[in-house]
Image (cartoon, rainbow, N blue to C red; front, side, top):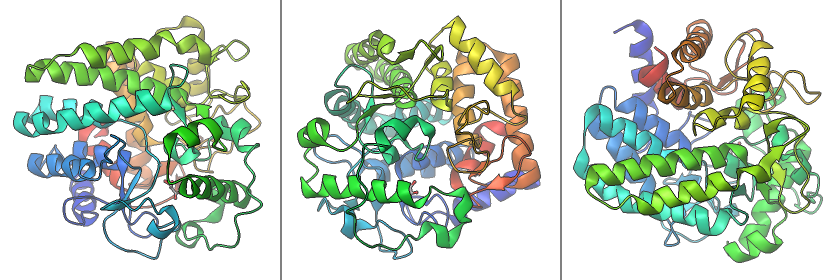
Length: 407
Ligand code: DGY
């Protein structure tokens, strides 16, 4: 075990709050959905029991509708805004009212393949299936996956969301105090105008009691998300493989994957020659290629034209896949999802590269990601041009992917 392995374990243990792991102290003091699935993957390398517990705790917050919330507020912490009183869905445990990328089935399968735990997987299976059905019923109005809030995408301020954000009125949100910029440099976080709009969307959801029909039909924001679309294709296929392992019927998850895949032409942007975020209300496409398109590799979606664009985007930086194309005007190498590279997204892309037998690219991605962590530590994300560490430090998912993949 190297010193970095030891530090990564220490970070997971240190961010453990008893059955769930916070992404990082201060900035994100609760359980976040996709962060937790990665935490489980990291724990599986040295504490399989704790890995399963992480997923079980996450799914214990699942709503009756099947939705698994993006934040679970197990304990109070006034260092974060917007907290439970702003979201207000009235669930126990308290949670936010939106979801987050459904990576749990992908990582649960990997965990089971490496450390076993069939009975724990069996108990989670119907919950994961219910969540995937929720995505199908409430987030795939035209086949591909849509998000109703940029936070639901997990890629908060990515330029992917600029067309939809432009139509959200953030002027009536009233006064509030942000907490994120008290923890990390404001220049690495979304700007105020973005934040006002994020809060306006939360207020809309709360006002309609998180009624999904209202949000889908009349909500201020609805955009097709290439990343969740690809994640969901892969997650449904992995769920089908899990079903087979458990002696369950894989037909439904396979059908869900096929339905989404059949709808992919609706997010093909001819001008960019790539799959792309698209405003479901206006039809407008985002104007740059993002790491959302690169996640096509996770789903095993093959497209020669897009591959060429993605390869060029990767070659424009030194470290990892950037969250936004450096050739785009909107590229900002240190501002959250507007350019930085995210180790966790690189890890997802690598899962796809490995499945496709593309070992040279997988090795390159792993090496570049490892260099970032070796030189900068376990930060949330990094400048892909010069490796500057950005965002939160001692970050759970960066430590987790180090242990499970990059080391
Ligand atoms: C935040 O508060 O910045 C989070 O990304 C929302 O999930």
